Length: 320
Ligand code: UDP
Ligand code: MG
Image (cartoon, rainbow, N blue to C red; front, side, top):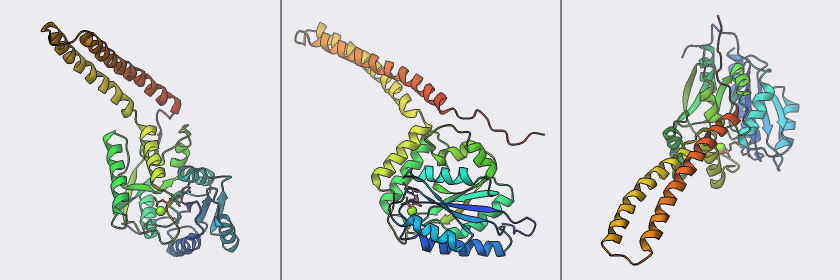
């Protein structure tokens, strides 16, 4: 990757969503500050770059720590949400409020499990023209078997349903302020960022890193939250589950025709007791028809869902 010699220093904003992170916040602030100062010295970053903590309605001392940090160093900023809105909304709050304060923004988890030393590479990619730079974990040896398994099943499922996602990329990414402006045009309330960014387009690239263990505090994504997050991702992007009902309906319908023939033959050859054939036939026919009808309704619900999202139909990058 080329160096920064030909480029103006980039004004970078780093956004960290924090939910009950008192155990790790000072450590993260200190490390990130050292990294940013190093890059400012290298003239890669402008000296008015900043680090902003978004307190997502923490119940512990997170906000007090943020206040102290902001008071001691102008590098730090803080945003406090009124209650817990969740990781994705905390990121969105940070990005939307700060898009005019920087050339580009990086989002990263407050526990710094993602490798901050690749920030330099991200900014280099940005200087070379990438509007979005994805941080991608190329190694999960620090994750438990369970986390690895569930996460990778999720990415594969998303790929299978043709949702554009970047494999093994979470929410560690750099985005140009122009990209954030376009992101704001996506009207849906439930924004699943990992799926939206690839939809926005523009030239993008990836940097690869090894993910570390959380060194203090606990994960804020216990299993049930992970599951609901994955479900949100799938249902925010894909109508595949709805279409599945339709396919099952068709299969059931043909199955019931086949079974129906068998029932009639059994009845005609006198192998049945009275009432069996008619009951079964009615049952088979109507459950088949029912499923197909549900599938048709599903198709329309799917259309409504696409319309309600009110996503932009296109995004123009340049006009000449
Ligand atoms: N987080 C948040 N709001 C929430 C849950 C989590 O802002 O409701 C933040 C959290 O403070 C952390 C990031 O989201 O900065 C990711 O959470 P965590 O590190 O616990 O997830 P994991 O790495 O275990 O998947
Ligand atoms: Mg973490």
